[in-house]
Amino acid sequence: MVVKYVVSPHGRRGTYPTITSALRAFSTLQGVSRRPRSAVVEIVPGRYEESLVARGDVRIVAAEGPGSVVVNLLRGTVLETYGSVQVEGLVLTNRDVDYDAVACVQGTLTLDHVEVRTPGGAGAHARPNTHVTLRDSTFLHGRTLFTAATGTVERCRFTDAADNAIAAIEGAQLSVRGSRIEGSRIHGIRVCDARAEVVGCELTGTGNAALMADTRAELTVADCAITAVHAEGIMFIEQSRGSVDRTRVTDAAHGVCAASGADPVVRDCVLTACRDTGINVQTDARGRFENCRVVDARNIGVFSTKGGAPEVTGCHVSGGNVGIAVAEGSRGRFARVQVEDLTNSALRVWDGSKGAFEHVRVDRCTLGLDTKGDGGTTADLTDVVFRDVETAVTALGQSRVTLRDVTAERAAVGFCGAEEAQVRAHDCTVTTVSVGGVVASGKAKVFANNLTVRGSEGTGLSAAESGYLSVADSAFTDCATAGAVFADESSGRLVDCSVNGTEGVAVLDNGRVEIISLRTSLKVLQKTVRTVEEKTTTVINVDGLYVAGSVHNSQIAFNNDQVTQRQSNEDGRTT
Image (cartoon, rainbow, N blue to C red):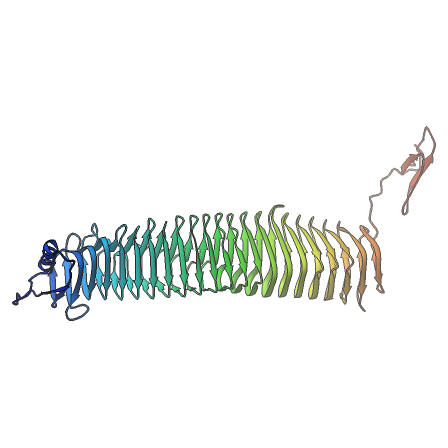
């Protein structure tokens, strides 16, 4: 049986002058009734200065629709509920940050087309073991808090929260759908040691991460739009898990970030105009990122740093500065990735990090891959194509690069090792380069098998300073200057190679190259190794003699116990 109570501040006959008096009458009836009852409290328009306590099965309604009834309180909680309570169309306000504006203490509470205003405390608070439903409602300035409770939020608006707009903590379980969150000073939604599902929501202008999962939280996000965020669009930290699907982040410092052991799955998302990074994985976090697009990240599209270890598959990075960077002792696996139109490196591995790249396509970037760091800095590339870059691969420091089935097209330099780096290339191709196919300088070492260089305006191979090139089973075609050039103190080895073309020379040898089975119709030019001639001649006393090459200005004695050396001075006298 439903009992109806009408509240009118004008004291009409059969009505109650205050909401409190109507609720108290229902509580009294409940106390004496043998059968469970429910009540409807219908309130005529007006402003009520009351603190409400609703018990039992009660529905509190603004008689003339949303906004017509305002319940205001300077101090304390405006509405406290026990039982099964529904509130429709009221405006609930308080000005006390030390109290919840609305508190569900026991049972369930539904706010439907309600507006809650508070200066900065909790606008609505679901206490432990309760369930709160918020539907088509507005929350101004205060946070909405679910503590060890369950909750449903549908089509609500949260504006200018002084804290987090929504927080689920201490094991709470929450579903937020079709809602808008704007201007929160901290987070839009924070999930801490709790579970939350956020679907079809808009979040904008938050001071920190729009969506935050921390302390082993589980956060599921789908079909959301996040814009103009001062920090991260979505952040997973402290071993949190979850998934992000079909979500767009625009104008955030970082699009999606995982840190301190978090491990999210991110799929089919678009991260646009991020002021620092699009995807950021750090401090021992992991994460799988599938079929995402990162557009115009100002610093780095995908960044693994400080021990991060993401797996990135089927992603597209375009515009901005650096495409994919692995740094500061991190790892990363990247497959079926396309990177294009960057002002700096498409792929970067630095500082003791390890990057593995498979089935990657790079177009129109300044650099393809650059590596730098100690011997623990490694990059492994398989089936990678670089087009329209200045240098396809640049290895510096003591870093080590392994290339398998890698192609460089339309570049200044194909593969370059410098300083003390090592590059190993298997079944690779370099075509249409303006300077050289493969370069080794400093003390770098480059090893190549089944390498093809075609259409170089300069050289096929080039070594300088103390660089070393060891190349086998390889072909160099139409290299305008030379198939291979060895300068300075560089050295190398050519085994079963061919140089074909109509101009230039086959090999320019500085005398430090071992050539085994070179097929060519072009000239091989050898530069004699210069030695410093001393004033005294060299005397060698050996039991047996083997001399490879020419010997000049030497005296050689066989089987002599004593050797007397004579020398003429500049004035002709013998000494």
